[in-house]
Image (cartoon, rainbow, N blue to C red):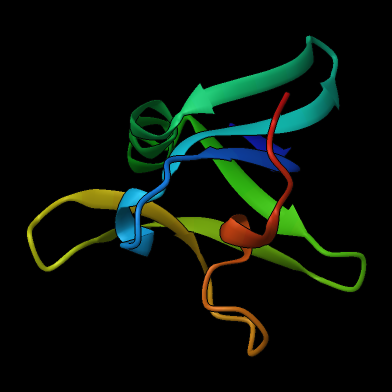
Length: 94
């Protein structure tokens, strides 16, 4: 299992934060930069393949999977007392 730092996201223009993230991405690894569709990242987390985290310069929080009231899985981050979902504040992946 690898721990991958998420440094960017691609968002969909939706009001509902549970339906806004399309793709997450990160910087350089031994394989180069990477991206994952949200559903692929969810599968990797659920199956223990990879873990993802966000680092804001002071501390890190894990990316976790939650289920909306409508039964849809989505990515968010552990609560850190500063942001409800640190993923939504990351820059867009190019």
